[in-house]
Length: 256
Image (cartoon, rainbow, N blue to C red):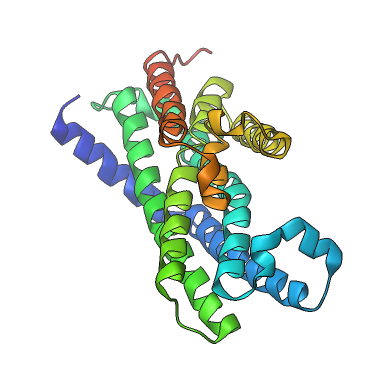
């Protein structure tokens, strides 16, 4: 693999991604969904809904920017994992479901290079989505509260942006599952399973900070409960499963 072949593969994968509505629709649904749920939760909490107030926690009850950002962080941690997992699953599984995987064997660009290009396109897309999500939540907060963000709110927005970025790294196992399972369903199932296990670990407490998929969510909602070392462990998920994905694409065979 050379820099030129990788650049060509990235350009091709970027055009394929741009030509589809999957990534665009996923991004729009995630951003608008997080903003809408956060705004609705704040309005409901202010109306005196005790059950909702118990679920949102004391920070959300504070109202204003702190409350809305707290709700947005909780929703982003779960919805972001699912949305990013769907996008990544499609990037890899489409080659199998559309039957285009056979044509990749005749290209001068190696299959691991193509797999790496897909991952790079995915990361660029997630950065754009994370930025759009943060802006959408900020506009929603201004609309709901009628106030511009102060210093604390700007820190909260930065934390939300970081959370979205770190959450985007967690569904990389779906790329490996799509390759091994040769389709979309194994990748989606892996994403849903990862989401379910993460939610269980977060609710159970205790060792949540040492479970890489749960660390970003805990850091965003309760920053003092997660250490930098625990947060750095999040990188083991995309790196480890990214390498497994490249290895799986290198060993792909047409008769299996």
